Image (cartoon, rainbow, N blue to C red; front, side):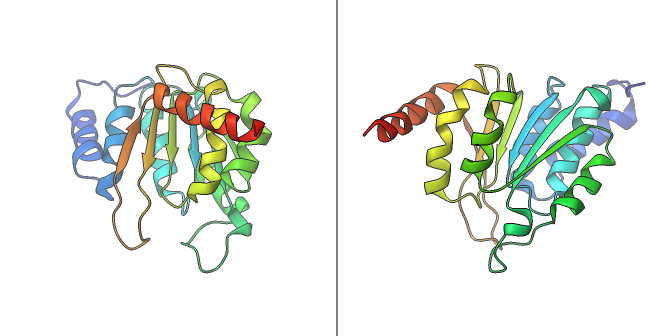
Length: 190
């Protein structure tokens, strides 16, 4: 049974998630989640997995957890020690599987991992791209996005920043992504 959206408990939870949760830069993503339309999620760069768990918990407020499909791309054990903290693939799976959602983890940088799995990811509802993704890797990855998203997909791209400083997310349109994917396609042809 799903929480009654009119119940006081649900409204307090939703208000806290959308307006008071930490870190503040994740709030626009949670606000999108509260529309109740998200069941297919792709996250590039999961770090310690806290945002990932919140995304899955928010989706589970509106859907049976078994209907939620989450794909997380991260370096996991391949992460260099100088980079921000992260989980091993086993730790990440354990943490996320507790939500009851269908979890798929793809190790590697965004480009290599998305290249392997793009054809199996269709009609995504939400894409979250962490600011720790190197621009040169992400620029090549856009090529795969048009086959995974549609005009209804909400894509949030975090601005690059220092690990200790908050960095906001920008909402990216399917049209912008199509332009970026086209540039990547032209670079491949050259």
